[in-house]
Length: 213
Image (cartoon, rainbow, N blue to C red; front, top):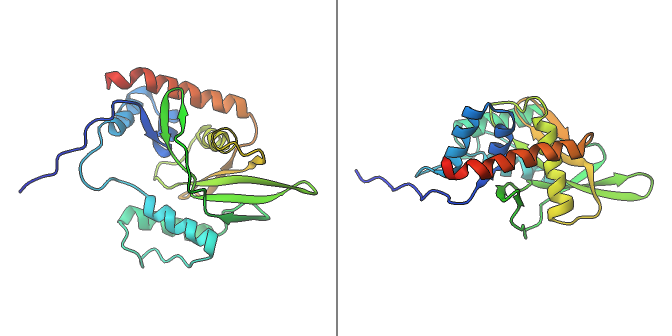
């Protein structure tokens, strides 16, 4: 039987949003394992929640009924969708959801490309007359976002909206990372600068050790 050759290793640092979240809270040996998996992708289907996240986003944007068993999903995706359905509403109060922009510039921090784009755009009222925007990113892995990881990833999402996309009305309260399996939303409020410094430090470490992995 012939097996597909694995893709070539990534020569420049590139991580997914979820993997970066894991690196933030992992001990160094575990972080190295996570980064090796990013540098040396395997052949065949990847362990991903992409389809499940698309279905959840379609529900928030269009009201489409979610039936975890009605789609051709892998077991881990069905489990995540079942948790999403059980959680009920995940949007901040008095907000609406729409699809994210189709034009998505590449996103770099400390010379590391972050392959992470929100599933939906959030719009809501700020104050008496203002309108704020934000975004929501699903986190569907079984390992919960512990410690400061959830707030740090929400801060990173706000950084993406305000700095990478340049949206002047981006608001921290509307930049949400939703941990689907535990039903916890994290927003980019509080010590934004400290949290971004934490992510930048992690990206600097990734850039330094990438050639040695």
